[in-house]
Image (cartoon, rainbow, N blue to C red):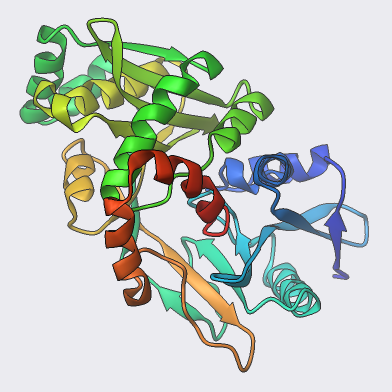
Length: 344
């Protein structure tokens, strides 16, 4: 089979259809995701498409370029997404997309390419493990899901409801409340927050695939999550609550409201998001019955360059994390989006 790899410059329904029929491919693989990232934070987007001799799409690889003095010049598949890497119909297509990505990285003088995959690529690449996503299969009946939960989970949801917490779903109108809480929590964790503009752009680009679920008490939002859904797969990449309300279990009501909503909507799987194995968030997600799915993040590194992944648990960034926690909140809200655009 003859395979040609091209860089797509306009939306293509054939590419979206290919992604839709590929198992495990989330919203981050869509051409529109990369374009939304470009509009929101200015990163260059490159969408590699493999076509056969009949011009049928047989593979895709979405890439975003981050370039800064402090974090280097890198390609990421895919920026601001938990997932990425190569989608291909065959080994030949996969190899063609990989070679073209390396050529592109060299043309752009990039030091590395980060592939955020689940199944590892069979190349000589640096591998980073230790992170998982937590997947929960969804039933069509919320009652069936409720009965499957551990009694501790059900009791904590009931506690939230008895504490007069209420849940709601919306879009851009909830963004200010969500972002306020999200920025506070990221500051507490010592991690730069993503930009509000990114989230607004995603909400506007995917009005039928992105939304915000929120939990409130006494008329005030105290917890919220940014949710994406596509092709039966639901993700909650960003969620936060105010720690002073933790005794009311707002997170339990938040996640239950999301699960219940998408059970009724016919979704097949709920992804609680990325976490560290055996960490606090891992244990929280596991109690719902979610199964860990290992993430294999792989890195091609240009010969002569040093492998140094841009992640908070990299020892070279540990001091910076502690410093970030001590900065005033208003400083981190201003500086966070500037820094995080290069973290992707």
